[in-house]
Length: 134
Image 1 (spheres, rainbow, N blue to C red):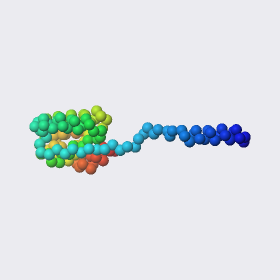
Image 2: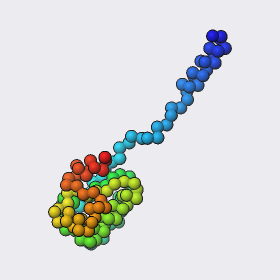
Image 3: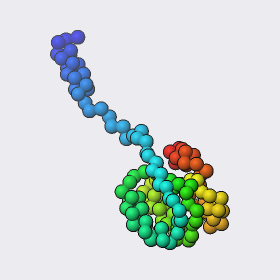
Image 4: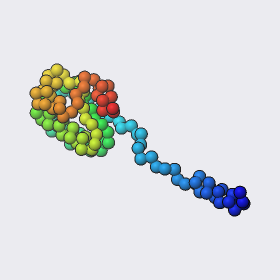
């Protein structure tokens, strides 16, 4: 190999070594799940007092959402409406929404209103989080 050919090969190798690495467009970042707990009654009064705050929280975060109903003892139509609103806001951002720990009465209400078809309902927070991250 001539000196000129060796020099050209060396220059080509250096140019290759300095080239930027290819960009990996499939990021492996894990999407988080945020759990919000509701205590007491999920009714018109709660919906009126908390709607603005909850909507602001939903609009600012990029994550899957779980509503924990373990400590909820009553849900009325306004409460159901708030859950539907939050579910739709989550889905519009490309994330998933679920309910966990509903009481037996709440579970029956979701089934009667067919809301169990809109969002996942899970018996525990762990199962809901696991399902949303799958």
